[in-house]
Amino acid sequence: MNVTEYQKWTRETALYPEANTGSVPELMYLSLGLAGEAAEIANKVKKLYRDGDSAEKRQAIQAEMGDVLWYLGRLAEVLDGDLAEILQANQDKLMSRKDRGVLSGSGDNR
Ligand SMILES: [Mg+2]
Image (cartoon, rainbow, N blue to C red; front, side, top):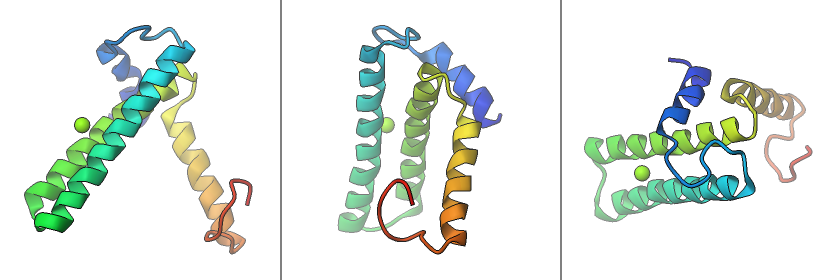
């Protein structure tokens, strides 16, 4: 499965208020969900640091990454975007910054 297919598939499991409407409340729901799943990754890494590392814990972090991707896929759908194009644009931006020697630093428009 490629990321575009995955993005379209997320529609089948979009079971929440105002799903697939593209409304601002839907964007809010998905953004909160994305932040929550990202926080789950951070919490698992925190516990890995505190309690010790293991292959199982690293696998659990990867599972949370899937949850993050689900929310990103939903957001791409709602915003009429394409995850594959979003990934490509991000890669192009970062490679441009690297080539111009401004990869480190700050500011969106480097
Ligand atoms: Mg999760």
